[in-house]
Image 1: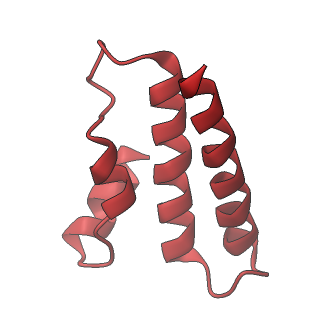
Image 2: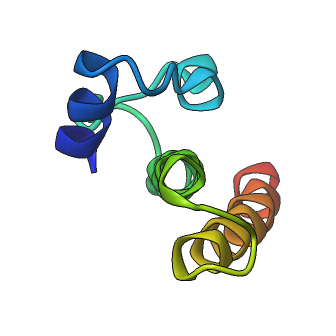
Length: 79
């Protein structure tokens, strides 16, 4: 997913602000599993949103589902 992020950034297609605000990357081994899991869903949502033509396309449905999972993992991080 980070490779896809890099591709979109290099082609000027996305800024990934939600993912950047988390200040986490795959190399941050000191972060919790829940934080990494949340970051994956946030990044996946942003990538799928860039690829979606509308909310009913395959990528659009994926984006909506990843957003739901990102919200759910926030609860795991709070516990």
